[in-house]
Image (tube, rainbow, N blue to C red; front, top):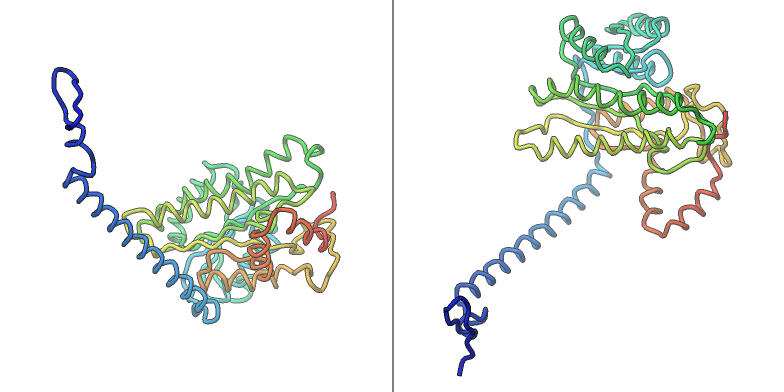
Length: 330
């Protein structure tokens, strides 16, 4: 005899309400199970297909795209890698917009571009000032055109133990290395979205991949740059509108002789040599033209880091101690 209960005056048969006797419930569960199984199978196929495709592209990379006629804005163009990028893009036929806070060095870069028969324009701007960036952006649109390649290159690097860094130094590091990227995103990304065309390049660092002593705030800003680039990519990818024409590239150099690294420490110079800005920029331009999402300079560090990250934390630390490289305090 079926057991029954009394609730609010109504008699309910427990067996009649059991899930294994509910034909509609059983059918729905079977249907949901089949759908989930098919979704998992499709997911696995997609993951493996993408993996094999990326392995193929590793050995057969994209052909370098043309940047001729593109308007390239480079912050920190007055020296170092910024200057070398301006010269390299100009040689490839780009119209270069040089932005720096130093008028003399910025004008020198523009003159060097023009001496090589390239096109360049000089704009002075404090990239920590959002209003100044917006005013500059409007001026560039009227005088040059819509920026199609944005290179967030400007940066500073106080090098000393955290407890010896002043509040002013720490705030300046985050404003130049991190917040400036956001202000420049907001100023130039909308026009790229309207045209579904553009490329944003962000200078991170190997200090944005692994922590280094004497560079705590700097590491924080460079980790943030990589995170922001990933997040912007996701916003564009998940938007229902088509923004596939906008590319993002994050650059993570190790040590480049730009003048910021005052006291580098290299145990194996042949393995971890200090690069000149010109050498580093060759890899950067190649990464932009091949539309890589992220690169390290040298490239071997990317794969070494990815491999070591699979192990317990102490394992990569042993390797790091073996290399014994970094920056001494200024």
